[in-house]
Image (tube, rainbow, N blue to C red; front, side):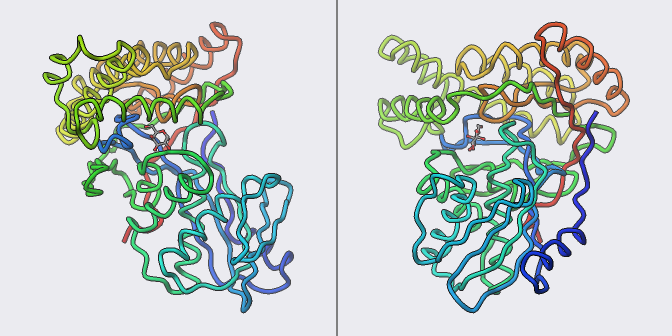
Length: 386
Ligand code: GLA
């Protein structure tokens, strides 16, 4: 089992000094996230219930007096890029740098008065696992510039800029969940986020419950294109009803219109409409510590993502099956994030962690030929949480 590998801030400060031959001025950090329930609802103006986790991205930084941005990525063998703030083109080679470029474009659009910076980056969010390594990267960059240049940026501002960087610069039409929870998560809490109003409320995760994330270690394929297709399909159904988003549609309306809607589109919309309902119910269940209800809602969510939204993989289904057998009604398990590979999340009594880990480690490789990775997580503070 892999627990969080603690990144040593002092070590990164030393590395910064070795690299740039001067002291850093600040360390910024932003967490990745896991979503407990409410997937593919954010870009439909709906509800999500994620938590920020104890994996994240560090940015060590110092201001410059010119317009140059220097970046060293410690985890990529110290690969470095340099660019001018005013000549911020998409980088086809060091594609990771586009998250920084995109965020800075948005920060300038936002009206921030910034100059260059020397940056050193290091993170431990598993890449491509659906745990929002990119949102944590974007928010950590925004946090570092906010500190360096004493900017007036709120968590919601940062989330909007991070999402805009993905939408306008990187080319992923993601919603706002990942950036918002990375910016505004709260220790020991999940966050119910209304993705239309951008309002949120926190729900305490009982201290005797553990968050286990299991990486199916299936390479995610076609993620961006399939994701963007799903998004378009949802918009088509909202258009059919003359509504701004699927958030505005009730199940009764959708059912009544069934004969007039293409079967695939109907299923996509049914997932979103029912997932929004489940997410709100899950908030109540979590607040009331009603695990049998949460268990059922998480199971229904997974099934809906499998059959209606068609974004799970056989491996994710197998993992959810193994975990659900152990957890029963004492917690829940489902795929988490965008799907097409990646991770499942399980909420379970701490007492069941060992048994669940053993079951996953024994059964998953036998059934799939793949070794899983288990991360035991805690809910953490966001980068902009006061
Ligand atoms: C990805 C996106 C999010 C959200 C999830 C699915 O993580 O970045 O905005 O749409 O997929 O819930």
